[in-house]
Every structure is written in C-alpha cells, then in structure tokens.
Length: 126
Image (cartoon, rainbow, N blue to C red; front, side, top):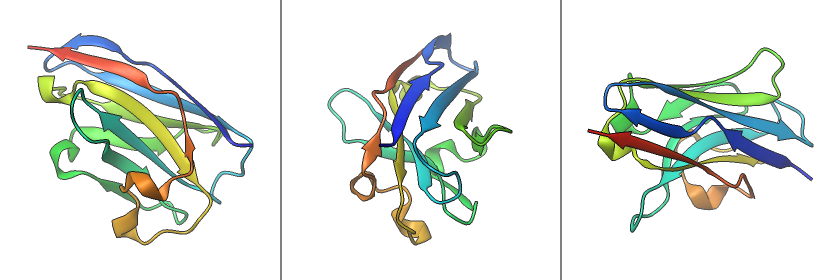
C-alpha cells in the first residue's frame, strides 16, 4: 500500500517561510498524481498545489507566486516550499496521491485522491 507521511509544519510569523515534506512509499514516482491540500477549522479541505503524471504543476490562485511544489532528487519525497506566509494560510496540510491520470482541472479536487497522509499543522501569526 501507498504510505504518505508529512513533516515540516510549525508556527511562523507572517512573511516567514516553511517547507513541508511528504515521504512517500509503496508506489512508483511518475505513475501517481500527487498534491498538497489544507483544511482550516470550520472550512472545507482545499487543494493547494499538485503535480500530474506528466510533471505539470497547478496551484490555487491564493498561493501562486508564494508556494512551490516539487519532488526531491530521490523522487521519494514531495516538498511544498511556502514563502511570504499569511495568517490565512493557517491550516492542517495534507499530502495526497492517486494512481489515476487526471485532467488538470481535477488535480486540486480532494475527492479525486485515494491515498492521504495524516496531516501537519501550519500556524501563521500576524
């Protein structure tokens, strides 16, 4: 089975940076779509950034230019570099993966993904 384990969350002041990592096992990189989602208290889970089977990336508008999704050199860890953090970025961040090939518009839809990590908390104070 695919296993996803997130790390790197924490507390930071507005304007700061964090890097989240998702250690993945049980799958072949490039054969899965992978994504980062977040969920704030009282809100629905939101797609933040994703990588498709072809390596193309997509971001929710609110993080474009601030967040970067990328695999590490070993292709076993998916990173999310978050710069210029804002209080509204506060949420639990989840890594997700799915073996199916999605259209780009599907990549940020939570219901499209079958494998999920346990989440890591990110708190941004003003």
